Image (tube, rainbow, N blue to C red; front, side):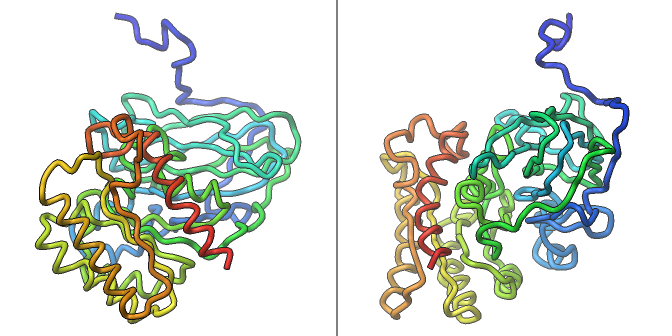
Length: 354
């Protein structure tokens, strides 16, 4: 049987790209700015390895998944090539390989972030791949490259015309990052491509930096994780780990405890609490109980005079589109993530523009 790329050339993926006059730069070069991740010990990581290993085995594995990672730069090159060496690539039946292992490129045009295209990983991806984007002429392009959501990137090289200028992009309008802590949904499952995960969408909407601490199945509100969050410099925190509490009893024991631990360390930090996105009507008593537990943490904070706490019940996140907002009655699709971003972004905007 013919491969699909033999039938339709639009599906072809360039795994070996030859372009005369190309200069390759390591992604860690000074001409690029790295956001949401850092290069350490031969990998890109979302947090220090020793911290991740002290939280749980799952976080130790997932902290090298590059959800929320971005490279920003300006160039006059008429194309961008990437050559990525990758490991720990997750493949799932309900999640596109592009979302889990691909790269997205955006360009700022007339003040707006415009999607240029995706670096499509080959179906047999094993240790990374190459991809290329053609840009509109040899003019100055302000670019943001979004990293994969559910895979590790060990090294990344960016290829540009050797005669092109290249420099760091201007700083974000709001450079102090928003930090997101939560589950697989926070990490980005199951967005069709990286730019569509809700934290990335909000970053694109508001021109704000962010750090994604979503850990699929492993956001358990551990004290060590709370302590790590306490020492981070941020503009706001989105607390979104409801899904990974094994049961309402665990959520009851940990939710207010985590909030109080962070609030004690950061008394003025704006904190937005989410309960898991839900498709109405409530499917069982446990779902309602979970939402009530999070609401109780919020109500307690308000009663204590806290003026920097916000709560979005999960039942409000999808609204009238709830029946088409997920891939599996749990993980959002692109519609679901857009609805989440549209609900959270106005609150964050009011916070970071104060």
